Image 1 (cartoon, rainbow, N blue to C red):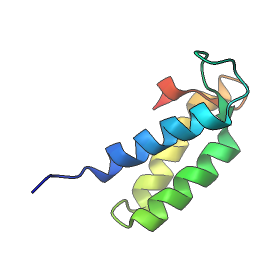
Image 2 (image 1 turned 135 degrees about the horizontal axis):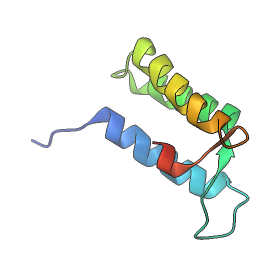
Image 3 (image 1 turned 180 degrees about the vertical axis):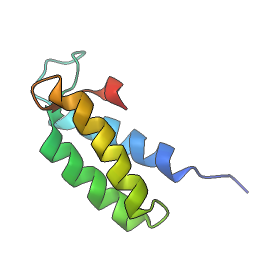
Length: 79
């Protein structure tokens, strides 16, 4: 039986979303607006069911602080 880490799966999905939704050139930072990142992350975490709302809010607060230093943009390296 394989062991599934819901947070790693979610972060992998978020990396792919950033790469798909960015306006940066291929190979760039793959930035997306915090609002977009927050919406997608919250939605995916809620349907996963294994990541608590408290964990989600704490993670998004940490990401927001990093994004605020980059004009409101989330970079893959932030997570």
